[in-house]
Length: 321
Length: 251
Image 1 (cartoon, rainbow over the protein chains, first blue to last red):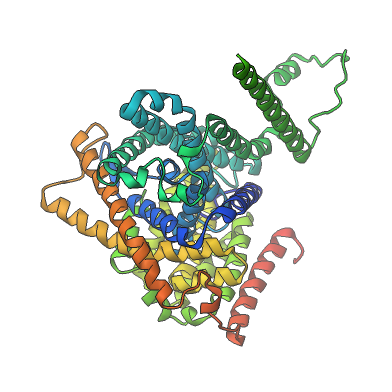
Image 2 (image 1 turned 30 degrees about the vertical axis):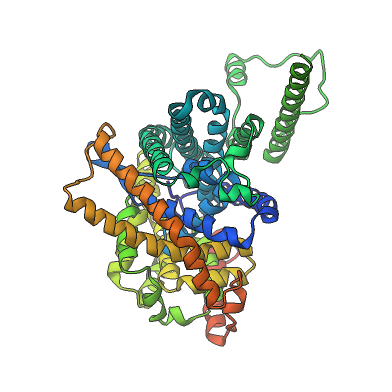
């Protein structure tokens, strides 16, 4: 899933860099207050472990193999901030020391594998907390399997989307045609993600048997104030999933700004237009990419705040009951 | 996927630090190399005019030729990026035309080759110290240095475990339904984590005892020399010229 230089449309690569810069700055801001110098070796060894574990190929069938990405595994063991930080370093080393993945594409590669994959994995694992809380060891492994499958699949979907958007907005100069990129990436990674799920559960099961301290509820990292998955609540997990959607949003708008939606296209084909509106809304989507992006982000934030408000109201009502 | 075998080979020979120091490019200041090649790669990645894309490929091949890097290393590194390049070229060829497909191969190859030269001629320590001195946050560069050090140790550990597995008759399994194979692979990966956890603190203490204070800045105090400036200026001038030609600013 490592995108090389020259494959992506420059504007898509730039969006990837900007998004990654914002994400890693936020993580550095939040974790910078909590991470201490003595935590660095632990995060580094986990990152190195993920790097090396990525070299262990597993069989897929038909003579092909896949390998671990490890975003969900890292997040489950160390929490989302440390996972994003550690996976970023893994991607940086792969690009700068092994030439695997490009410099201009580093933003997108890091966004997919170091931000989206751990966040999606951590979010899904957290949302399935009731499953593993009531289902014991089996429930916990089922939640971990679902989380790791989702992390790989969502990261691959983001990558496929980026390739398709590049192709669409550059008129074929960059990217990969959506008809090839989306089915190929999704089909291949849906299978690889099963391998990721099995290996992740296998590693967690092995660690819980051989080195339970690494997975204990009060791990060393948690004691030292490093945020970890197990200390989180479902609300934070939902926020992680929303953050993944928010990260994909600007790339979607690069593509969406180019065309009409299905109804508009149908109306245009039928030769009909919109009548006079009974209600004039205070905002519009705008004509340019940035206006549409701003409208989209505004809508996203309003919808998010409304959801939080509703959840808070329900929580307080339940508390009273 | 194709890169995994290459990483293994690289880890077996102990990353590329020894090789990097022995080339003339390896002796240049890492900051000049990082910025120069970054500017060149960005320019190459933006180019769409066929003659300029092919010109950038020729320049990249020229840089690779004078880099003193072994052809086997260049080919093996290039092969790691090949699956993505070929998939992209194939999709462009069948949807737009073979000329665009060829252009895609030329553009991505120009970028990849330039990056390989940077990677192959810069020791890991110089690379991270260079990034730190260019303003990359301390946490990222320090973590990168530590991860790079640990990867070498763990890669050797993995290599030993893989040999032991083979000696016991393990051949990698056939499919995702092969429970035994997946259990062996999971246990191997799990063992990497367990062994690595034990080594982390010792390795860090070793660094501290050699004067490491958590930041790379103090460890490299080199100055930009005229040779570094010349390298940076030539690459920047070439990159700007290519972009100016594409934009029609130069006839």
